Image (cartoon, rainbow, N blue to C red; front, side):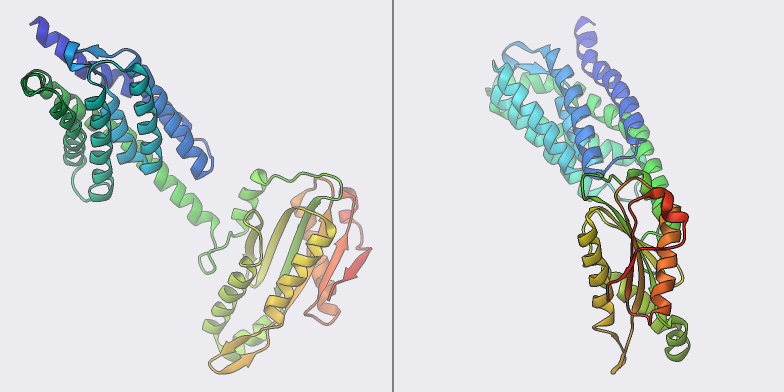
Length: 379
């Protein structure tokens, strides 16, 4: 009975620690952050939990020590991906090397085996149509391949450890996988679906760009350092005579035109610039952390990659141009005010003959609402 209670400790302790981990992961996952930051945070949480477990292991004498590292490493790679799994594995390897003592080599091999089992599950069963409980049992069994580390012990000791402790290892991994897959897996699925719905609501389905709602959602996360000579620019443009082209060549050509222009301009923007389709044939580009000359250069480049090359309808070349209104500020500003000012500048580009950039250099946020002055026609 004493031995049974001792071995049951292997099952109970991991579940208690895992429940705490799931709670923290759920809280952290609900905070919006970049994918890489999220992975690093998840790896940190799993690594910290692994360190807690390895700091209070079960002493198996000549058989070394036992803790829940295999379950944590396997689950990390299975549910959260190779990056989180590798970082958790690295933490476990480093800590086990630091602990040293009997069973070092088997312990290291066991961790690699648990990682491999979780990786197999990730790519073979993560998206499978099997019931959750079946997938969880499979995950627990695959993680239990960490018992392969026992083969590095002398045969009699390895057999003894497998017969006495093996069933509890496997039971702990299966129960742990069931708990985690139902609780953490369900939470991750919910958050993934919610994120997919949010992305869908913020994306223009034709071009793949942000829509107006997406642009508004992106603005709070847009960081701009208003250093000397640095500010934020907004380009606002539409396609000249778009309705005429649409009527003449058909709506399919019009859609191809919108997609083609989006692709050409996207290729000429920086990774952190924000590009959105505002509706119809109107687009907006936000350029953070640029000086006035850089903003002029980007605006002209956007005009030229469309106007200088045109598009083809079959074998017929169709001239396509943009009228771009732009505004640059060297201080924080209301985005709606910038859009209105850039829209008015775009109107002046239209009346100036189209296929031009009209740039409003305005150093004061308060003057955006005044009649446009200090305009420059770039092209």
